[in-house]
Image (tube, rainbow, N blue to C red):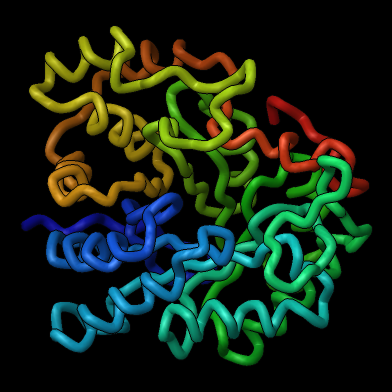
Length: 320
């Protein structure tokens, strides 16, 4: 079994280029998915408080560590600060909650899940009134400063951000004492993110693309810019046939070959294993251009539907 190659973060730490996404992986199933992934070479596990499955993931991680299938120092475990904990005095408690649920003494990477702060309501991830999220005016720069303290205390090894636009990323980077190691955003053949990838690389950050398979199970697929089913795209299928690979493998390879990290989600053992078999072939320059030409600005996760468009620090931009 070939090992998954690593990318080097600005801090000098190594991160596996391919990780296991866990969004929409339910408790009761995700535990086994974690074990299958680890047995088959995954070391990078992407988690978040928002996903409401970190306790179950923690059980899966505890199981593989107890069995001796992997050492903790060889894992790269990621979690994310949710919007309701953006107030600086809530940041450490939120991080410690994820650490407790994941049964970890530290996290390898902790991301700000979005630049938007929402009202903290115990037990509610997306508190709303009259159909709109209850947002706050917490400045994400102040939230970031509290995240820097997590590094100082040794609770997390690295910090980064997700779902920022280019203006927000530039502003945060200029104000940061500890610069972000990684920038995570949706990235697939229908949303190729040229501007954001170039910006992240210009800052020395690793770019990580989520939803490489377009998250066709996303609960947000009833909007006008919903992505197509990439598995059925004629261009993707034709390229897959030429390489003797599956459409999913072609879409994952598209991200890998773009020099970024990516985190396909699966809870099916056969798919988890299949998704690792993307390092034994290369797409041609022509094939990469064909895949890039499929871009039409689609979003599997349209953050404006969560109230972002009305937020002081998040003027929603459907592009970049």
